[in-house]
Image (cartoon, rainbow, N blue to C red; front, side, top):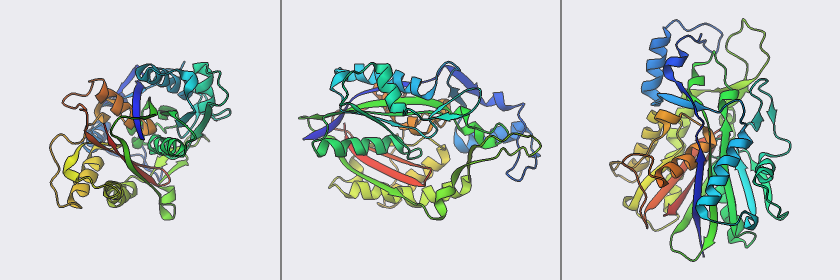
Length: 352
């Protein structure tokens, strides 16, 4: 028995926000003191570190569950499956449906229930639920779907990663330039074909690491704004990721007899280009190997960090030929990996 991704779809919002659009912002440090550097200097440094040139924001008429539905519909069509035969719909997100005007999160009913409703699925035994696991949520959803199928509880699962981070960012925080919106979806099925999911691993570091990403106050202390926004300790996250993510990737690979030289692509969470490059370099150093050319496709330059949506969106874009110089071929070994709030890490090895 093999479990494979048989269909993929993504929704990329139409509103493009370029780095230059932040030129007139006021940026403050976490202590409430305004940053002295010009915005041109701040933005240029940001681009050099993260690789981000622009990002996408969802229109005011669409919420997280809406874009999750749009990507799910494409994945179902791509897999050519009857939606009524789906056993599970798993939606990974972090903030639910967030109203564009009030920034209030709404998670009742679950986003998965809303997606099932929008898909007009009648089958009551198609179980819909959400997963909160930080940026690694989509990978964790895939791991859970695989467990359901291995146990005999399911044959087909829809796993979605969707987020509208643009609605939970503090405009006075320069880190706000990282975040974006989007959705990616995949269908997983039991097949008789070769390949599929080969191994997986998950970990949660919840001692001093648990609050590296958190909800906090605006950095502009002169306002009366009581809204909470997504915040992070960027340096701590970088150091954590560089220490722990390569080791988790190695453990995932070591569960098989596959040599690292057989890995053709690494699809890693698109949060920070320099951090991702450092993680990949450290991963290969653990195997006393040099990083191969063209191993790590990137979408962050144009799409930013859309959290749980980054990896399934990247997979779909490559599958559909929309990432230059990257493609999948039958038999290719792919390594998926992510890190995010919690702090959570996960990975799975996949044969295309």
